[in-house]
Length: 168
Image (cartoon, rainbow, N blue to C red; front, side):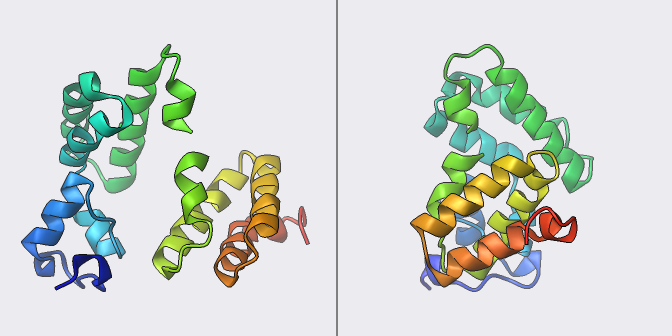
């Protein structure tokens, strides 16, 4: 089985052990929500932290994520974000590590509809507090990447601003 070309399991129990191990190691991207929800976030944090310059903080980040285990997914993700924010507070490289756009740029014309929806939804959420920034990013992406994938992401990303009459 080519793990990179899988369609994703319908239930957590159907995720092959090799896929789950790759997800938790940060070596595979999730291809659907079932896989994403199955990721052990404390393990993923411990595995990926060294790759983004946080080797010294990996254990503390993992422990902070462990402490959130009994909470729902949204509260866990917010807690992990808060832990990252605290760990990076005062570091000169904070902006480079935390920059939400450095992660999104390579995905602006991704062929996976799952990835397209994820990027667009993230931008749509960001538009609620940073509408000018999201409009600027979407405008630049339209100019730099005139693909149907980018057009889909931009259209979906701007849906709240469109409903508000901010963009046409």
